[in-house]
Length: 141
Image 1: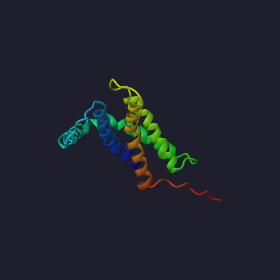
Image 2: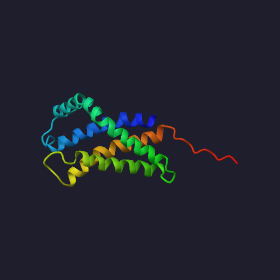
Image 3: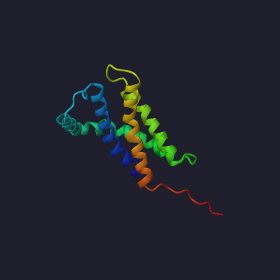
Image 4: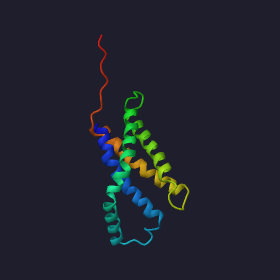
């Protein structure tokens, strides 16, 4: 249960911020930027944070479920599990956000993929590092 709570709290927050950065980069916002413009970016982020959680809650729980399923496969170690969760989130984010805007290509593919990859890897690492994982039961003779 703690696993899903971590994913539900971390993924929409970081993913929403990365999505905002990606869309502002794609629109050309960063070509002439001052410190005041960066402040406006954070204001927009905190004003739209509720929507990041509204639309990011279920995808975050789905990625948490992938992490939970991979936890129960004995051959998959923690590092491989974190990478598999990140790769899954990368492709889900590309398919979800990749068709946004008029541009297409490798830069858009990678940027929108990182919107899913980074928060999923961070969440999976936090779960591995700070949440107790079930230990296999010893067989009684």
